Amino acid sequence: MPYWLVKSEPTDYSIEDLARDRRQLWDGVRNYQARNYLRAMQEGDRLFFYHSNAKPPGLVGLARVSQTNLIDPTQFDPQSKYYDPKATPERPRWYTVELAFERQFPLIPLETLKAQFTPEELLLVRRGNRLSVMPIGEAIAPRLLALAGC
Image (cartoon, rainbow, N blue to C red; front, side, top):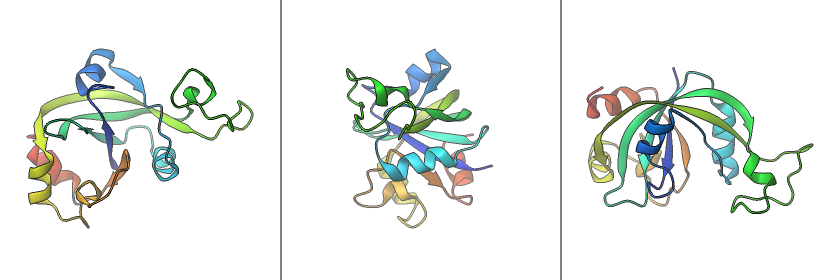
């Protein structure tokens, strides 16, 4: 089963928000590589939820992909900060997935992740990596789950 990591600033959308909502469209991704990762996701894939731009940043929970290959509606909304004037309903540019909450766990700080994983093992700890969606290696997911007590 593939694993992924998704980042969100907790002031925008937190793991607590996902726990409350139970399901959420993961909209607003405007990086082509991250979009391609979203398009590669399959229903049932699991995701590590990461709080970025927090003090401290870190992993805070798990979710799963509940729907795939959905058109991101924010690209068509001129009032949205994610509006894309080049996108049309006939030729959308941005796709996404729906996430379903699985569980929250105590924060695993970025510093702990940096101490446990090399940049080759975990893209998240690679210097300068700002992707909001990224794959987690097959050998790395069990180690992250163990750190989370799962």
